[in-house]
Image (cartoon, rainbow, N blue to C red; front, side):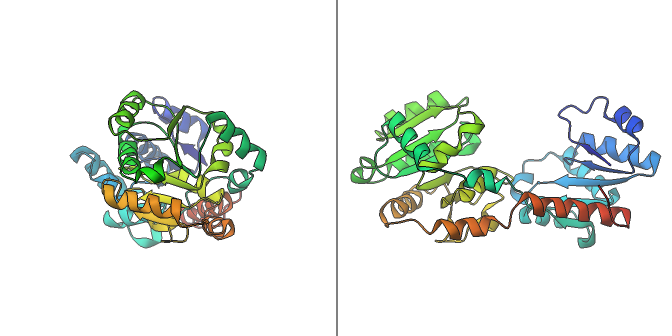
Length: 313
């Protein structure tokens, strides 16, 4: 078996010829999957396409991309759908259900759930954090919707903003623009940490009371998995592929349209003012359904369906 997920697929065909797999999993719906299909056609191997594309995200595809997808949809042996929204998209291509295997988008839940009080105190002291913490973790780029988070925060009553903290963890091309927006809106207690090594992010989850994922376009959003593994409720954009599956309204968080500023601010106020957050165990129990072990089982099932016999790895 081979897994082809190269950024630049130059040489991929020769690599497949050299390795000579009897099944290939290709990691998108584009040129590398066309290369994979050609190899499989010539060698009589089987192709599985691993797709996280969602109906919302697919609105931005070109006519040429849609033609490639329709071509591959008719010819690939199987499909791994990374989430329910990805599954819906595959169905929209008229792919029969028997060819589609649902696969959980997952992180190492045990890693992200390992928090301690010393981490919490260290980060609070480092940034002089006040009150409860609203946390964002991710790239500071336009499609992540951080400007709407700042506007929502700025719309909160001054009494709430002055006693709590918005912590923005990450770096990116929009950082200076977002800092200017904080000044223009006279928002209070907004802290930018810059980019933080991934191995240190658990310390930041440890201090959070609510996590916010305001993305305007995301096929999933694995930071939501990470936050929930840490037991944190999440305000999750409805434009993220994970929202339908991970968010139980009022229990694991809420689904929002980040552009609706008044509603956004209302949910922020709710989680900051309504006393203790939901029990950590409730949130962690829900996210435990999305694990590496479940993903592995789904991948093996897709392989077995494509081969027609049990897979042994």
